[in-house]
Image (cartoon, rainbow, N blue to C red; front, side):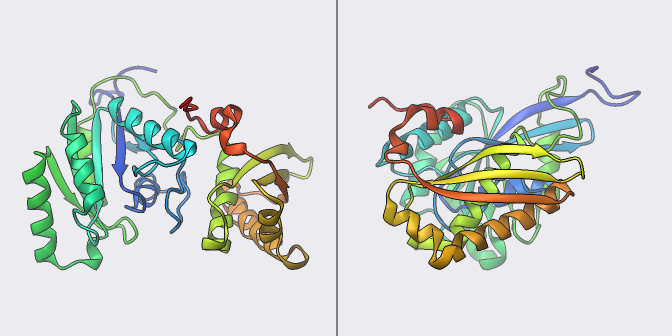
Length: 306
């Protein structure tokens, strides 16, 4: 792979870390910029756990978007690992994009992020999201207040959900990537293995179905993935919870809840894979999985020892 397109501009490639408080809309924005689903979205906070990378092609530029877990005050071991992962993702990127929910404005969480980002080296941009929900005058004031606290290289106003302002943001990122070879094939949209993406999609459906009924300590793993001769694929997954009482919640009466979760996940996977999917989802108890180093390695997280 050469560092230049045929008779064209030199190739560019770099990382952009998406940093923000929980529910700022980072995953929605990454999916919108990529043009396909590479990260799960949920109203439940702290949905993204590990680092997800979405790949955007714009002319000669390859932009690698790093969807990091929302940054919050960590309480549990899993929380600590997620926050540490988010900050590591920021330090390794060419550009740090701070995403702020324009409706929330600069609350305590965003004020703390602005303060911590000011201590990190590298270029930083401000992305105000959900602008369709906020008056123009408030947006201008919010942008001014944020830039007074931290001098951003550029400020963008977008609605990830409505696809507003994304072209300008993409152009800026593409033209500010350093010259160098692409790190991924140009038709690849994510570095996430399909088995893991499938598990993430089922976890999203789990959150959507159960909302606050579901304890935070739940996870999904893809146990097997078998391509069949008829062109379909058979996938077996396990939903892990920490207690039997939680298992009963996920199963639902007569297995109705897990059946609905499985059906919703299967339909989305069929759309992504463009093939028939036979999905079998089991619900199991794995006590203390959130304190098991192996589970952290599977999610791409560093296990906090303290």
